[in-house]
Image (cartoon, rainbow, N blue to C red; front, top):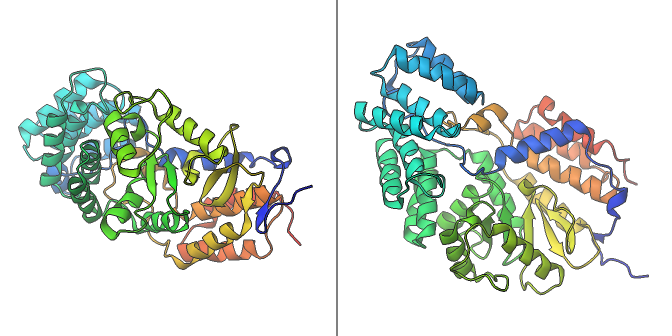
Length: 424
């Protein structure tokens, strides 16, 4: 009978208890909070007229915005329509209404309201971003699109309000599609200056990049585990050997071509640089097959935002804030997890999880603490071992205290971990 190498532990998946229902809900919510949807959440500053409103003025508009940021967009849509009727000369109201309409798929209304906002205030940043997304072929596949028009509106959005972080994100995506490395760095520098990425999420990005193996292909699922790492790579030259591959962006053929060429990524047979539209899952499945067979030639890492890899070729080896797809039977690299937790403990995870000017309803409503990702690693460790590592619970409690993570928000993680007996 063969034995795993030192530090690697092989446990049968069928013996692993599932996370308790509250923990599954919390993990699902955090994953959703991290994940880029087909039309990603807008991280725009209020911009334009909205930023200059007199505090306390326009209670109907204030209520509509609070409802919007509570992620009740359907309800906010009606309230914003009423706010526009009450003050049709207010560009900010039209801009917020346009954003709600865009999120609900009301493209005609979104375009009309954003255009009216720009007519009333030529420097209405939110409205320019909405118009950019309506022109952007990445987000609007059903109507008239123009990459040049989208880019012009994004540029106008950040010129009017440099804190409009999501327009900087869109400009980075456009530069990536053009394989314009200087344009990418400019956009990421603007994103950093916008202060839309809280320092705690930068700590998370540094943690992920520091712990990934050399030359890894890292599959990310969200904006928060994509933009901060690539920002650190571009501006601080931290781990440029790692290929951060966002699942959603990989479906954009121009982005896929850039990533494949830049990082020398292999493609499945029959897929060429000219046939990459909506091919992300096919490409990732091919990489998984190759990694499982030991033929990929570089590590394939699935970041925790994706959720644990489902059934398929190879074994998902827990080795930090990610799983590595490997041909071997081991399910956890104990030493790598221990080192990842040591790295996490040296970073500063304190501070808000959402910037005050973040207009994303999902993030504002969820307020997920980045430090919870460390808690999930501890839970996944206990799950993989079938027991708690001695001393881990007091370490995690101290870590949460230093990070400012409230006990209430960590209860689901504790419940998950305490399913497992204390180790010897």
